[in-house]
Image 1 (cartoon, rainbow, N blue to C red):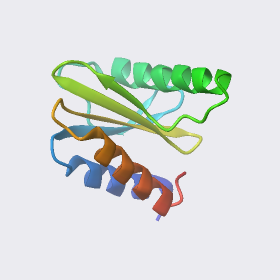
Image 2: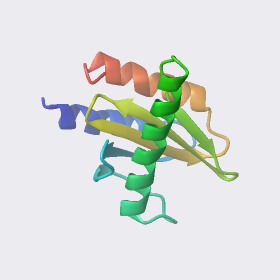
Image 3: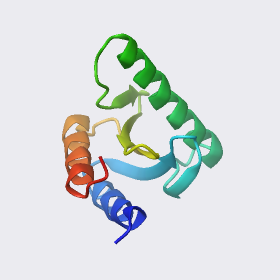
Length: 118
């Protein structure tokens, strides 16, 4: 099974977590590959900005001589979690505010490692 098929299953599993509204695979260059886009967002903008956010956070963590695990944005009624999925992709997960981001991210990262994606 190819990486995209593996990632599709991981996205499906992530969507099943409590309070998760959607999950997307996005290229590091900011192109939407597959998955969901929040209702209030334009797909292209959501993908591009998710890639920029992860890239900026990665740059800051490098300057601080630290490794980046993930980025979480708290937007009041929603949360956005972004994690690297290998060198080519990232996964963006958006959820209701009540979501347990730590549990969701641990599961997502565990699944990505188990499939050899990261």
